[in-house]
Image (cartoon, rainbow, N blue to C red; front, side, top):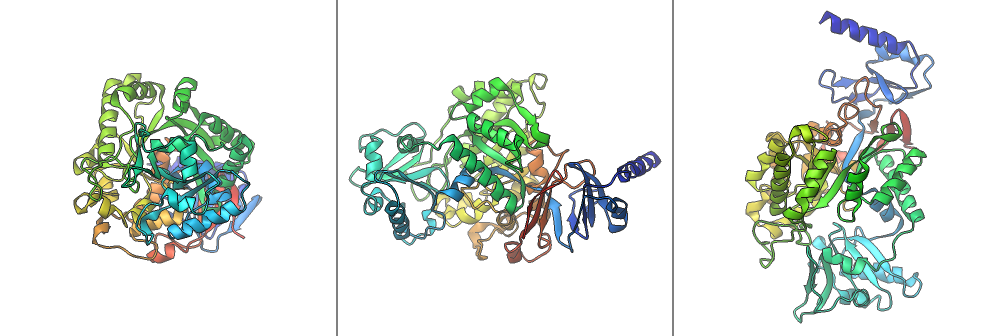
Length: 555
């Protein structure tokens, strides 16, 4: 014990020998360091934390400090880390036809009509963000709805979850979609009572229309990435885990970070659907480049679709659509060689699974792959493979996450949106293990918390509120919402910081405020661990600090 004390004293003396680059004082600091959970001051040199403690201890760093920020009691938490989002999509949403907040089919028509009015003749009208669950019409939009306001422009509007779209008749005709068109594997074409396509294309069937949409130019993609990253920084995210990038766009993002145009940390996972995952296996991972701001070591796969569009793969049929149990997008025999190769290369697998059949299939296949590759032959002994979303899990499968070392990468805001329609999709019996955060945590599983932006709004305070309140943004919940699955505030914060860092193999570098770790902090206007639940949604980000650099400062 004496040697530890002497070593700590020696480190403090050494740290104080040079001035700090950044000093934060008069703060309300939640460190998530069990040895020192609270503090009021932090000193930073370079991109590392050199002191965590009180005002008296911080005085040794004040003289010569390049910048001192008096927090005036503001709350500091470890840098928030979005464990699942789509950076390019966030930027594209900011700059393009955003349908979030559309209130009805009529409202959707009005927005399309306004877009058409300013569009050149025959230009594709492409939008995203609508969701019908609260609409008074209580139905999906149809091609006829779009034809009425856009007969001469091909129109494709993607649902908020990204797993379904509605196209008008012109877009369907250009895509060759008729009543006789077979649905591709892993997809569905919805038909009306007369057997004609309604315009709704589910999951893999979306490609029938989307393949014709003119792709974004490289310059546009770069703009999306820069704008998306700037938005994340303004909200308080110091890092994001980008799910399903293409290899080419990953290289663009890598250059933007190296050039300093993207300031936040990015853990990039490539798409397994377009060949990018195969390229990653051949090229190998990139770890900790640009002072730890860029890592590429994951592959994003899909096993099923979304619950709202009834593409999630269920063990039993949908309660409100008994002719379907959803869609499986992978075959074990085809996928297994890729999984075992990834284990040997040290590549992390992240598989989208929402339904209980989807989650069970992924757990089964992970278990077989892990058994097939001995630890000595793996690129990483504990590969920390993940299931993205993990929304509906059969009770017998919940303990398997911890048993297999599989991370549950979940997005709390999905629950407070989906639970308006999940009872009708699933029936009451399956709801007990839907969005089962507390059950997973009690079983020993790790939950990494994200937002799935632009599917959701991507705001960290909404995600934190959803995790601890499990209520709608206006405070509503009923008996179907299973409030016993709520996280405690400490659990919710950990899922957005330390456990999100664990999900990227970086828990020794970030996720808590400790000497030696990266100086990543989110400074908030209120103490989210104490204030009433509704006040969480009013909390603002005052500073976002990445590696000791202030990348956002509220005006």
